[in-house]
Image (cartoon, rainbow, N blue to C red; front, side, top):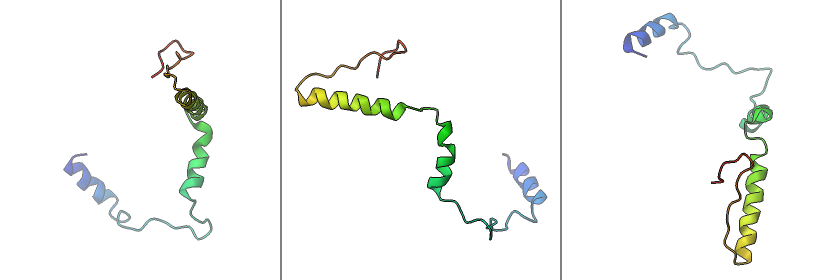
Length: 81
């Protein structure tokens, strides 16, 4: 945003721009944890944590038996990283 645009925006909203944020007297502020939970159903990587845990168990098991760990190819045909 250019300086002239900022000045114009400031003029348009001059009556409200320096006011403090609204704080509701009826609804208590929601915790960040609860706010994050609202979006959990939309997580793009559903199941990703389970995959990481399984891979971690495979690595730990291989190390426990002194074996060399080799990643398995992904089921999507791409090499695992």
